[in-house]
Image (cartoon, rainbow, N blue to C red; front, side):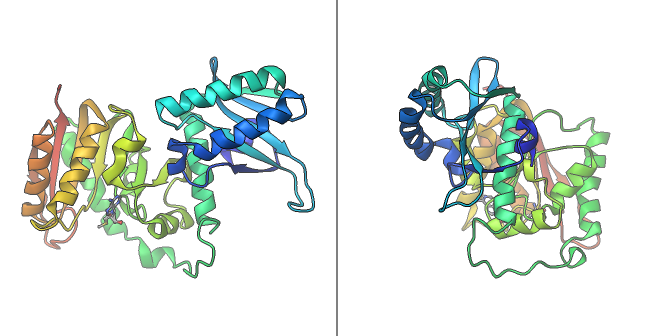
Length: 318
Ligand SMILES: C[S@@+](CC[C@H](N)C(=O)[O-])C[C@H]1O[C@@H](n2cnc3c(N)ncnc32)[C@H](O)[C@@H]1O
């Protein structure tokens, strides 16, 4: 696990927050840290500090094996993924605690790598069924789930884009990634998007098959992107085979389009594929209204199923 590698520890680790999404508000983290302060002031606890420059990204607290938990483990507290005010509260609580009770070791990492380590932890919790007690879903074979034709179909879109002088760069987000079939095409092109998907069983399948990168995959509702990412967080946002997008349900997809634009930087590449022209038109109109200029591209083939139409454009200056 990346987190254990970064810290050079072999014991188990457990984040205080039960989900990636809870890392945004860190209510439990702040509550527990208040409790830890009493022991820390007496200099009684073993701590590790993770930091980027002067900012504390994370704090690990050692727990010795006891009757209740028969193995040693570290509890992990982090404010790095939290909103600005919770992040500030985290540092206000942690910094004096570290003064009374200096950590036995400090590790400097970038906030990007720390975020990857946090993502990976929750991905492993998911795929090891720790987040879904009683899960009865049996793993399927790779061949019964993933289709090389589909992966190639996504890759071909990038050939078309390259001919137009377009290639995604920088910080990339893929929404509605499913089990990672489209993500696989991106990985093969050397891209490493943060992939988000609402259905945890689908994500679990992609992780289980070794397709989705556990450090770069998050179970998340794409209608709430702006709750978890700051404006301008991504230089490219993509989504493949969105839909079905109809008149009666279009407000849902329009909302996802608005959310993708809100977390995209100025000039960000926006790319979305669907199976029909009317669907592409609904997305294009929503994107245009949200400040994205681009075009609908006819990508129809004889099979007529996947990625038949796509919208490609760039977010304009506000
Ligand atoms: C047709 S699948 C496409 C999956 C993948 N992009 C591909 O091309 O193979 C659409 C995916 O969108 C996901 N989805 C639907 N609503 C979503 C939401 N609000 N947030 C994130 N993902 C969502 C579905 O669960 C489904 O996995």
